Each structure stands twice: as structure tokens, then as C-alpha cells.
Length: 341
Image (cartoon, rainbow, N blue to C red; front, side, top):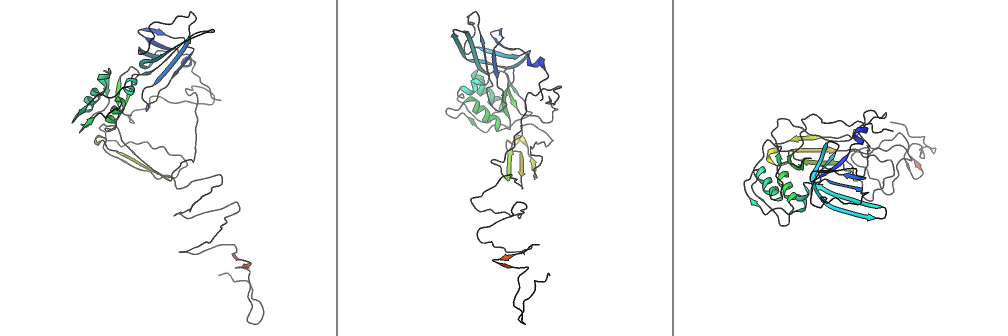
């Protein structure tokens, strides 16, 4: 089976830098990162043979987490757990990146009109200690009015201000708050490789799942492109290779703050390999085709209008066959089978 073929990356040291001191040799570590989820989390633990806990490792201390020589996130320690048992002494740390303060704290009291996005972002995050901000957008519209709702978190308010302009906030590994969006015109920054012989692989595992659960015959998606000037109309639509889809796409102007992309995907055929039972009426506008198995059976009346009924077989009503029935003849005999038309 495919295996990872990059031992240099696998053996990279995970280190946590606290107050300028680097701590490593962890017995366990975990780092979570998701573009759509704020406050990437991390946790590490190790045993202390000498039984001495570092004095500078306290909750709230600023940290930098590195894998090898690469910085993966900058944040603070959320919790410190010290465990002492007969088998030894263990130190466990956990924390989040710089977005944690925006997730935990309420938004500053703010009510303003006709403000540019950089000013809105600064008003929200600077009171909470975030000073490094980068806006990756060529131009944004002014806000008619923005105000903090009672009890609203700072991250929710920031997200609301960015989403109105088709943008998204996230934190770079060095702790910089970035406001922007994906640029699909740039070339790919990396390639995922998974070969059966294991040569050059950089994918540890890969899985694919397909399900008919909660499937719809038509799905409409409305979305915003991020706020920048562009003459290209770019969109990515992911549909199955076997789907017979009718895709309609229109790209509007992102600076309006309204949805500029619309995609409609239709699936006219639903395939089931097992028995399907419908508890209510089945209605279709495209006809019906059945083959194989024991054919089709009905319990109840069958009504047909607006067309004709054709078959190359026979039709029976009770014991009377349409093709092979006979009648009493005028001369006292029996008539023959019906003549084909």
C-alpha cells in the first residue's frame, strides 16, 4: 500500500518557544488547523525525569509553535497541567493561535457610519492587543453603519464586517491578522502526491466517500467573490464525473457586497441498487422505464390518458387473452385469433 516517502519531514522536531526559550522532545503533540474555524488549537505533553517544572511555563504566556524550522502558529498558552504519579512527572500544555482573544472576548462598544474596512478592523481588534493587520484587497466599500450587538464576540463582529465585502479573516503563522480571500488566478503552491510504489509521496492517507443520503435533484448555491477588481470571471464547481448536470454560472461585481456567483446543479437520475419504498405518491414528468427482475406490479387501478398503449406481448383481462381469444361466429363456429394491424 502507499507509504510516506519523506523521512525528513516525518522526523521534524516540534518545538514550543516560550519567553525566548525553546522546549522540545515532546512525547505527544497535536496541532489543528482549519481555514474556516477560528483559533487553531495545539497541545503538547512530555515527561520530566528530574521532576522540575519550568517556571516560565504559565497560562497566558505568548508562544510560538514550530515544526522543524517552519513557524506554524503564534498564540498563547490556554492551560497548563502538571501531573505527578509514581511513574514520573508529566507536563501538558494546550493553547490556541492569536485568534483566541477575539473568540473569547466581547466586541468593543462601537457604532460608526461610513467607515472603510481597515478602520473597522482596527476599531475591533486593536483594543484586544492585535496590532499586526494586513488587508489583501484592492478596494472595499464603506459601511453605511456598523455597531456591536450586545454580547457579540469580537470574532463574530469582525466576520460580519468582512463577509459584507466578500472577504474572510484568518491569522498567518507569524500572528498577523489577514483580511482577504482566495486568488484562483495564482498558480498552485503545492501538489498532492500518492503513488502505489511510495515514491515522492506527501499524502499520508486519502479517502473518498459517496452517499445518496440527503441528495437533492437540484441544488442552487449563491456565493460572494472576495472584494477585488478583476476582469476575469472565475468559479469552481465540483460535481461527480458521472452526474448529468446542467450548470448555470454568472459572476457579478464583488465590490457591491452582494452574491456575485450562482451555480445550479441538477441531477436528473437517481440510481439505487436496493429496494426503494415510497410511502406517498410518486410523480414524474420525464416518463418511466423499467426492465429486468420480475417486471412491475400494481395494486389498485391504473389510469392512462393522453396517448396510446403499446406492447409486443399479450394483454389479459381475467382469463381472456387479447391475442388468443375467440368469439362465436355467425355460422355457429368459432372465430380465429385477431389479425395483426
